[in-house]
Length: 72
Image (cartoon, one colour):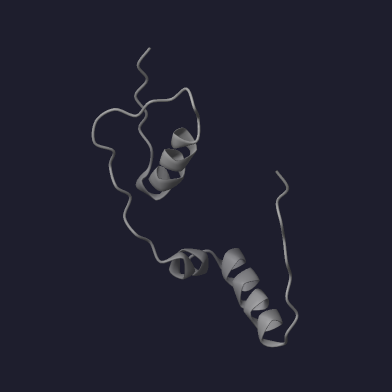
């Protein structure tokens, strides 16, 4: 079976990584390369994300680090 996906440019890298992680999916042809993004600019583009980013940077400056881990 052949499935063609149309993915927005800002999600292309994520979708390619997801598809490559599936053992039963074979990508054929030349995969489109996603444009390199400035993640900080992306986060600052939303007022809610900008506030959270600034708060996180302030906590880091004060030495209040948080560690998160994902279990397998």
